[in-house]
Image (cartoon, rainbow, N blue to C red; front, side):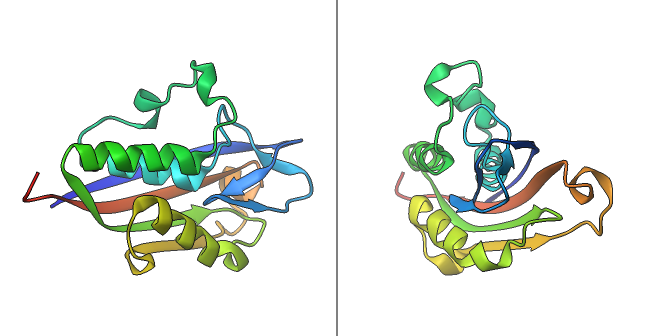
Length: 161
């Protein structure tokens, strides 16, 4: 078994969609700025999975200098990472993640996020944990300047691979 950790952060900007865990969340026209859809949760999960397999990070696979990934759907990027892991002989045991955001509230969206992640990771929803917390108005997330996410995962090498 192998463990991986991922972290991602994006700045909040007017005129962007807020997409987290593959869910578009209403936030008064303020969303995360990034080359792709800037889905911090899926990027942290992607980095955790890649790290567990010692395959680098999301920027190695999908560089922000490549226009093919401009405004890319991070669910599709995560699915490609899962395919790479499967080709290398790994399967996902579980993923645990935390979103750090002062606002908006994530709780109404967490089950859909879990469903989205489980679907593209080809695993049961019981293997996917998504939590959210504020930082009590401290730091850049507390000041609503950005949103960040952490993720850890456990993967295993397939015995048949």
